[in-house]
Length: 151
Image 1 (tube, one colour):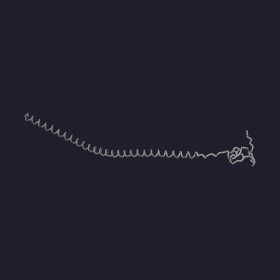
Image 2: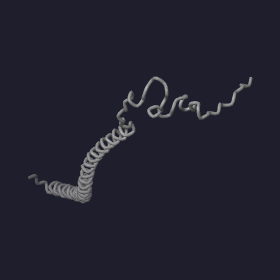
Image 3: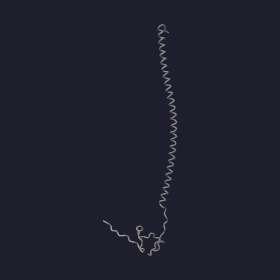
Image 4: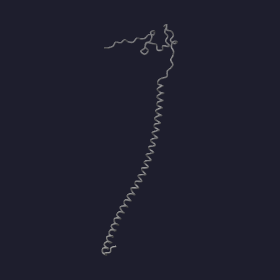
């Protein structure tokens, strides 16, 4: 169902101007002169003080927030850097201690191997000496039996 529409009226110079944006009123009411009995509009109207723009308030708040966040992040970063430096120093100290322990363990391991070899050698020598002592005791016992000379 189509709508029927009439074309807009053309404003004449005697008729007040109508605009879709102004709702049929003069754009600047304070300068509009009317011959009606209302009187002079400029004396009845007070001018408003210009308001501070809301955009500026938001920009100021945003700037303050930005400065606050940046200072918080910078202090947090400094704190983290200090902690990281402490951790790195501890790690380096532990590495040095590890190297010293590693060197000590190598030294003790080589000494342990040498001592173990010496102990094995001494055990073998002891066994040989015990064998010789038994042989000598056996010979002495055999010689005593031959001589029948008990001591």
